[in-house]
Length: 331
Ligand code: 5AD
Ligand code: FES
Image (cartoon, rainbow, N blue to C red; front, side, top):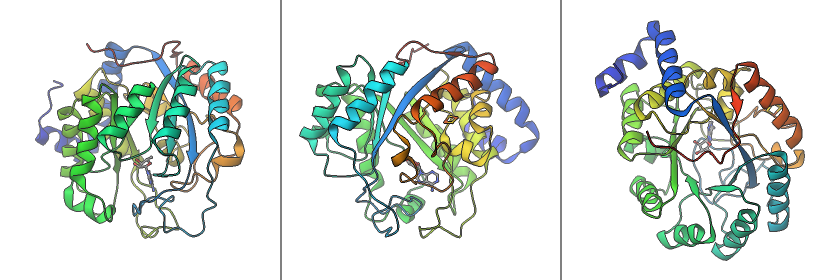
C-alpha cells in the first residue's frame, strides 16, 4: 500500500478527497519508524547577507530595503551555549551565502560549537568539496541544502546564475563526506507542476536523503515574485506526508513556513508525518531581519519563550521531547 509509483503520487496530489487517509498513513509510518519523540533543533540565523538572487527569497542580494547583519563568532557560540543549556542537542547554523565567513572562520565556529557536546547542522549554501570536507573535519555532522525544485526549467527561472547540476553535486559530495544530508523543496512556486512535485519526492528517495524539509512558497513584497500566489498549505502538507510514506525512517521538520500560513501549522505537520521542529535560538534583535518570506513567526520572541511554547504544544498532542541528538536510525 505504501509503494507508490510516480502516477500514484500524482493522483494523490491532485485529489483532495483522500487527504485524511493520506495524513493518517503518514502519521502511522512516522510512529512506527521514528516514534513519538520530537527532536528540537536550535536554529541560529547568523547572517542575512547573500550573494545570490533567488527570485523568491527576501535575502536576495538585490534587495535594497533589508537591514543586513552578521553575528560575530563569539556571539554565535554564545547563542549555541545558551541553547545547549536549555536542552537543545542539535544546533543548526543557517545564513545567506556570505563569503565573509570564510572556511577558516567557519571551522573556528564549528569547533567552538562542537565543544558544547551538541550535534551540528550547517545550512550555508553551495560550497566546494574541499570546503565541505574542511567543515566535516572540524566536526560538522549534518548539512541542509534544499534542491528547491527538480524541474530544471523552473530551477533556472528561479535561480539566476546558478546551476542545477552543481546543486546536485553539492548533495552528492556531502553524502560522500559522511554528512547526514538534508534537502527539500518549495511548494507552490509560479509555474510549478504537480508532476514536478512528484519528481521532487522521488528525487529525495533516489538520493537517499536523511532529512527533508518542505514548505509552501510565500511571496515576499521586495522580490520579483511579489504578485504571485501564495503556495497551498494543504499541498505542502501532502508533499511532506508522501515524503514520510516513501522515505519512512528519515527526519522531517514541521517547517516555520507551514506555521506562517496556518496558526497551528507545525502541530498539524507533526500529526501528518513530521518529527522535528527547529525553533530560533537567537535574541529578538535579529529575528525580523532574517526575512526570507514575510510574516515569519516568533519574530518578537526570545529563545526561552520559544522552547517553552513549542514544548508545551508538542506535549499537548501526546508526543515527547527527545533527549537524544536525533540522528537518523535506519530501519
Ligand atoms: N517562501 C517560502 N520559503 C522560502 N525559502 C526561501 N524563500 C522563501 C519564500 N519566499 C526557503 C528556501 C530555502 C529555505 C532556507 O527557505 O526553500 O532553502
Ligand atoms: Fe516561538 Fe511559539 S515557538 S513562540
